[in-house]
Image 1: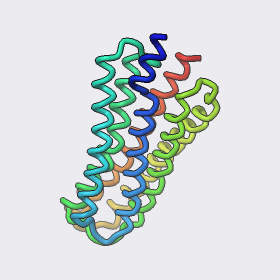
Image 2: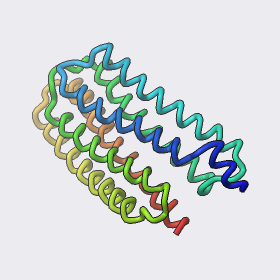
Image 3: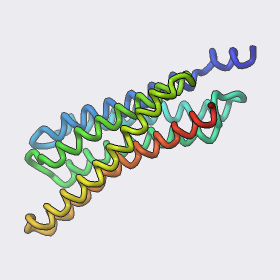
Image 4: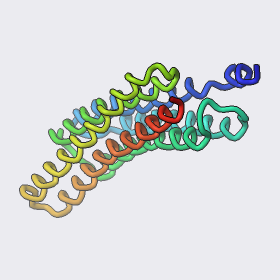
Length: 208
């Protein structure tokens, strides 16, 4: 009866799925942004709005965590998962802001490639988070975690290849510094996605 009461009052699974949906939207929109010649004010505003929506859900989860006596899994894991999911949207928003601040123009094929991998990884994260709702979803969660780990390795290789190309071909040191930051930030998004699924995997092991 007590567990049922708290579940009706606040469903952590619903909120995590809502939070990760904002991360998916951020990744989808990021792919759209990098296909354009320049980051417009409207694009910057829209991405910031997505990030703000994700922040709101994260804050709601943490606030409720401090009020709830019974939780579906470890309190520390709930806090960590909310923070790591928030970091995904934060990092994507940071890249878009950096593109605007650096006044990057033109479509960069490398960043387009990165954006596609980021979207794949965030969607796999969403599958993993969605699988937390039922312990029987262990195969769905496991497969999603493996995919995120694979894509993080792909991202490492992409970053190294792109940086090597940048250092070889770019003549302007300012340009080198700008794109070095952007490529490294893009790979960091994939690192954060991997951090999220490590938390998810840990939760599933504890619940088994």
